[in-house]
Image (cartoon, rainbow, N blue to C red; front, side, top):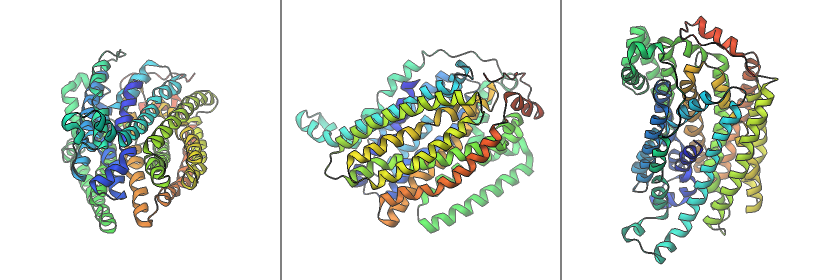
Length: 507
């Protein structure tokens, strides 16, 4: 599972270290890069992910994960054949569609394997793959950018050497995922009882129904089928409102692809909640219909947005700031530094959160607050660093704080729902977090960079979200303190829960 997560992040983030080369070869702006680094992947990842989250609650999770891994690996490799903004965008969208299965399946499998008292540490350990993948992306990407021309001169390989370094890098990191997909099929999968919906509808029909709830225009048929004409009218009004807002933003910024994609993400968030409010009331009441869940999700999404704004642009910033340093030195240095700090942060954070949670159920959000406060001076120092060593020290500290909260929040999402809802809950959180973080953070940073002529200013501007996130974290933490398993079960029962799950006290 850690290896799968490693390739998830490797294929997702390698474009960050390759960004400067891609920008030069394809003649792109920073706003275009922001779309490619974040939005193109994020929105489609989220839209597909919400359907995958529900589907993962009643199909074989290891088979679903293997199919997704194979798809995103192929699409990563196809990115190496891109010749312009449109073709590279299509490839990155494909990566997002494939990777949409990763979190729901992985989190659900691990939550079924580990009890609540170990869950934050278990998920935190799994998330080390995230940081190993990011570090590998920086190192491998830097090596390809710097060494590919000399490698091909020394060892010519037919037409392959006609590729640019960034194209060769995408092909090289995408191909091994196909072998790993076969290994995933050997995983043990904890057995699960059939839900009443599976018994009533059948698995194939349920899959088709969940896919229809995620993809426009099929969503309109789903809304009408479960909520009638009144629900359909509300959904059409939502479309009109989102279209009007997106049109205004396109006129202001001129970035059509960005706001069309974000509109799709916003529509999917609200529509998925509307579908569940009719189709699965207990799930809705514990997720999108629950103030504690939504405040926590929105607060952590804003934190993730701040992190995304620096994470994908840190390597391009270093390459632009320290032009006398090679891409290999920057890539390897950032990769080693990042993986060291991030693994310390995610394992330490998960361990501390588990113990803090025994005394205070708000521990996951408290840990996130500490992380956000620590991020602010780290980001400032990265932007203003006068030398690469100081930049790397700040980047090391940033990697600790950026990962400190992730395991605890992943466990918190699982703790707030019933066992049958775990995949859907992970996808619900990811839908909001990815659309907000990756859909807005990299683009925002790149757009401000375009407007001001300074990438550092673009990165610092994302800190405007920090005060809002802190306020939401405090409010959500006060509510989370009272959310015991017994209370969550009572909420589900009031909404008509029929599966017969029993609340287990946290230990």
